[in-house]
Length: 494
Image (cartoon, rainbow, N blue to C red; front, side, top):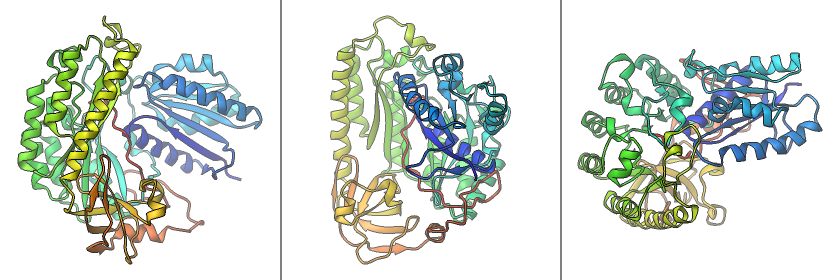
């Protein structure tokens, strides 16, 4: 019998995509996904190091799996990702029962390390300091039949004082445009209609081969790919966001009117302490130019509350920017003191109670602004890419018989299908009837339903137990039945 596996993912979109590669590698090596409710032969933890409680969460979960492993001889545990890259010695000391520890630069080594651990009956630790093979050349088991992540770069050249990720992911490495476009074309041939371009700082793409307009050119090139209906990207950095990118977004029909632009703070003094190489006025100016070119663009952001030395006046300036920027949503974070970052050594670390109180005020304002922005769409007609109900549905969808989908601006919309047969991957046109802070509702029957190749692919792969979800290498179509990918939180590093 084939060995079974389970991958548990923590963190941002980059980690989610890395987990797709880990699944692809394991299935290429003969593993099969574990059935729900049964014990896997292998558990892989793909970790994040951004949040303060990341290590506590990991060791708590490791302890639980260790007790299961003790009752199942031959079971293996592997730990990879950013926390593994950072704390390899700590992991093997605190959890000696872990079989494999691998880093962000060598996820392709996992199958070999697992076999070596089995044969040698001892833990295997392999952490590379630099990337040797670009990970997009590895097999990938996608989590969606109609939407896909596509990495355009890995690593980051920024030196934000709160962020440890650049030291774990390394300096920026850019893929060649031809390789990226070849992967996208293969995905489209496999039924994908939406891609999200990924990078720690997507709009600095091209720095490695000396083309400052490489990212805008890439967006325009995506517009030439027949069958590719939606293009998104995350995350850009305000320092590198240029007008040629705005023009490419506005002039390329399949690039969506959506922008995730990390703010982090609305105080120039705090931005300087964070080593964020822009200031409040520049940030707001970018948003003004985006909206001038794309009036219906939805803009989201990341904000950190309680950075060392943040005063009430600094925090008030952040609230002012939130009101002025009119974000459709925001990922808000309480500052985490992470060993190894310059910010961890700064004086004036704020008391937890102060940070919590500011965080609650910010969250309330973000919801207020987001709700106001959502209400502007009541009565508007929107195009939705239908999501899988198992991943994107609302809590009351079963009662209301609603399905869910994403609008062009990436807002989540719960809609009534009426008498139409609607499949994940299909496109519908519907009218928004009312709004909530974090989603829209369309309770009238769709105005139009368009069956797509993506919907055909989703339908064709349902119930085919003889088809094992397979892998996608660069330029090679995948096979199988991946589940749709839920939205992942943005890593606050851009």
